[in-house]
Length: 63
Image (cartoon, rainbow, N blue to C red):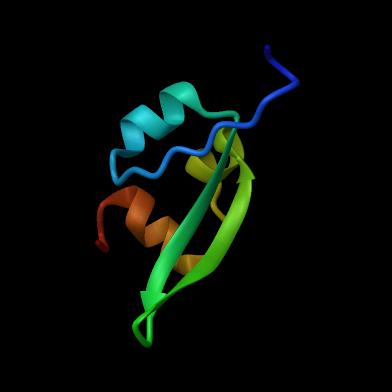
């Protein structure tokens, strides 16, 4: 089924997301609405995030 289906999982568990996902999206709550901050391959998002909010959250400094 790989390649034919897309499964969306919403979690705050970063280790679980990194383990099971190919791609990840990072959202941040702003003005009572979720804002997409960054989207990309999991490895890139976790190892070299581009946005300062993503970097802070992944490092444990925010959230």
